[in-house]
Image 1 (cartoon, rainbow, N blue to C red):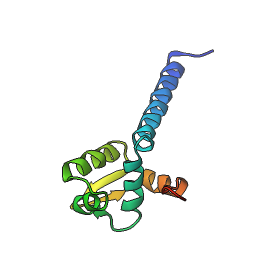
Image 2 (image 1 turned 30 degrees about the vertical axis):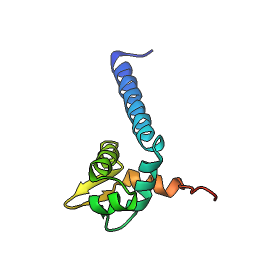
Image 3 (image 1 turned 135 degrees about the vertical axis):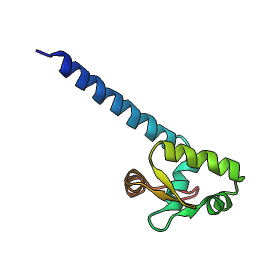
Image 4 (image 1 turned 90 degrees about the vertical axis):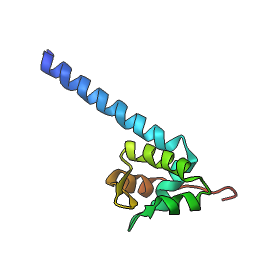
Length: 102
């Protein structure tokens, strides 16, 4: 039989799963954000200017997309650069970004 502690644990797990799905939707529903994760890549990271230039975006637009990725814990802003988190690294390891015509 389930007690209150079991129900709270189940609710907590359900909320965690919903958050994970919501975070994944933030990334997967935008081809720009998917490509940004791949562009930032594993390594030294990228500045907002590099990201904006690569995607031909105004800095405000790049900032919006980067903040969404940061909120979903796919990237982290360290100093001048954005770097992938473990979640971001896992994403690029498991998801390929296709270009038209491929």
